[in-house]
Image 1 (cartoon, rainbow, N blue to C red):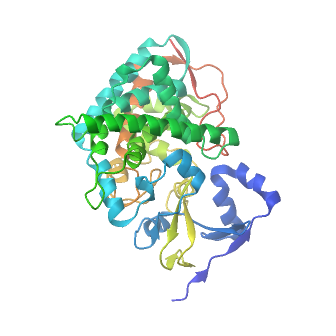
Image 2: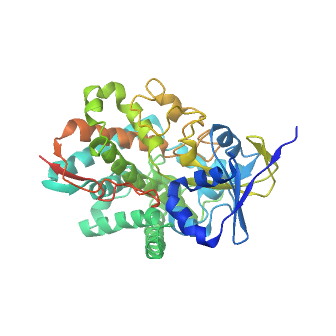
Image 3: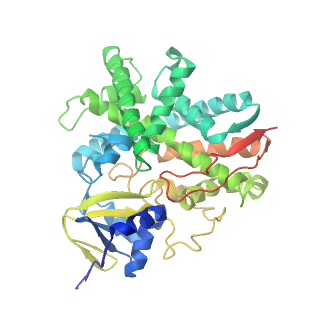
Amino acid sequence: MAFKEVPETKVKLREVKDLYNAGYEVLSELRKEVDAPVVKASLLNQEIIAVYGQNAAKKFYDAENFKRDKAMPTPILKTLQGEGGVQTLDGKEHYKRKSVFMDLMTPDRMEDYRKILEETLTQELDAQTGQFELYHLTKNVLFKAICKWAGVNLGEYSPEEIDELADTQVNMFEGTVNSVSQHIEGLEGRKKAEKWAQELLEEARKNPVPGKENVPLYAFAEATDVDGERLPLNIAAVDFLNIIRPTVAITVWVALMGHALFGPNSVYKELKQNFDHLQDSFIQELRRYYPFFPMVPAISIRDVEIDGYLIPEGSWVVLDLFGTNHDGRSIKDPESFEIDRYVGRTKQISYDEEYEMIAQGGGDFRAMHRCAGEWITLHTLRVFSNQLVNGYDFSIPKQDWEVPMNKFPTFPEDKVLLYKN
């Protein structure tokens, strides 16, 4: 069977600003230009092939087709992900490292996290009086909760130091591509966070605690590579932070939850009236509908066919996550927020090998590059949705609810202002 050549569009310098403003929809705009589901874009002698959809995701997450080594742009490695972490690995090295993460995600440990988070959030909400910002509150709550679950004793730090440590996590995911100043903050945040993590891991190596093998701090302190050698301290720190930082980044989804619950097209009443039946479907639809991480890159290690087009070996390819989650070929009315869309299917979406809705990646958790923290995300959004809908009464101050599509990550401009009654 003869496959079609990927259609190409050359991006002119004067078009760069318009494409940037398209934000999460930039790859969709490029596909429209060539009227095809696969597109090659060229800018300043750099070529990228963009794919999307359920079929593309199956091919993309197959390790026989694509590798992650040297695929992620350096600015993102130096802020968001860190160098040498699990996201950059392939084959046996990836499976070995990913297993450290997945061995921590047992039902008992997930229940521990849920209880810690619920207690921490309740304390913070009880302490609020009058108007507060949901984004700021959530950032602090998630940092405190994940640190306690991960074995970090925050009792040794002052409130100001804790707030600063939490901000370094935020700087890493807010400072990737938005502006030069934010990128510099992201670089500085990464530097401070890795130094902090290395100090914690070094202390854990000097003073191991029996019975703490399923606690992240001690698990990464003793983690080994495929040759059985203990990970270098700097690499262990990067992946320990790959527990802390992504959990704090769920702050973005909580702010977007605030938009869904309290914003212009609120589903608050519908959810509250049938909460137990709709909660998990609401959470999955939240993850599908709203933009989070826009795309992920890989390099093809052989010729790959996607949607009838031939992607040559050695191509730099990105999977459009946002586009896949809004793909009308497999999702009915993808631009509508349907609170009951996933009723009866919520476990299938996040506990099976799956490619239809890939907000945090697709495929098998251990073998493929799917986010190890997806279950932490689900527990987090369950706790927050329950407290925001059932735990307290809020008035909603006038505010800017716009969710800019050209900001990465994005959330309502005023970060969701609530007034506790």
